[in-house]
Length: 76
Image (cartoon, rainbow, N blue to C red; front, side):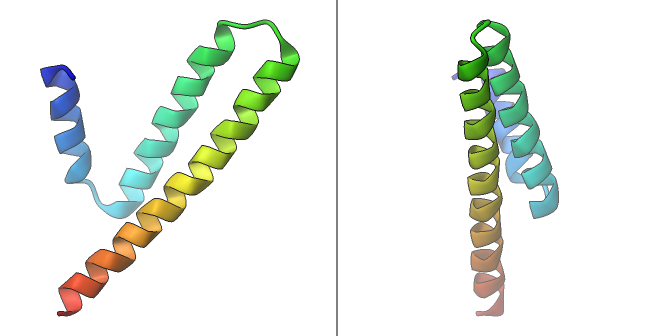
């Protein structure tokens, strides 16, 4: 992984949970947009969109779990 990528991830780690969720969703959206631009198959594009939605939902759940864990640690 490049130095710039490492800097980006370090920056991401310092964001508040709501902003992390927004950034993660945007990165997923852009990644799948790039992939869809490379194909003309409508069925494949629909599958990419479905997987992007599922990944976004799972990312949101992961951030929520992380936030609950941090609240639990802060309470100790």
